[in-house]
Length: 230
Image (cartoon, rainbow, N blue to C red; front, top):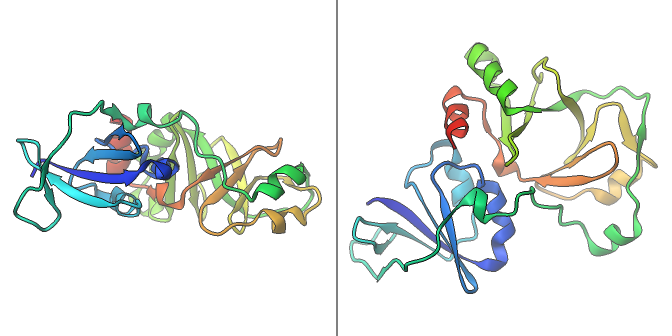
């Protein structure tokens, strides 16, 4: 079989942010449905692919026939769709946090400088600097690191300890990532903004973006090289 083909409802469009940087995948919209097509094997990214709310997954042969997973008989021919690279198909920005409606409208998020020293949990750097670090650092030092890459080639690295590189550092309040040296004003805001699952990354002005946990991969040279070519 040549590729995997996944069908999901268009209402799950925001879930595709978790696979935006997976090499080799493309997408097309057909009414209320989204079709995805990509490699059968995706290495460290397979978990992110499998976590999608798919209606069905097919295997595609060279003649465009669709085979349900585990079946030997095709059930359809893949439609002639307007396929796009995932980075072109998806919005350019990372998905916005799904905060409760009333909290977004009534709570003003303000960050102020803090004298409380917190352990650094994450580092945001340029992809070029990250690639250089990964290529020149012993593998044993990379084992405790994970990273996610945005569509504008910014990298968020997590681990203990994070690399001693120039960039924006963040500390962790459960799933909230705040710039080092800053805290909410008042600090109790952290309790109102908590949500389970994905990380919510804040800048010094209180703007935020959600980074799915499944978007993170182990810090391996092979993975970084694949993304560099994507």
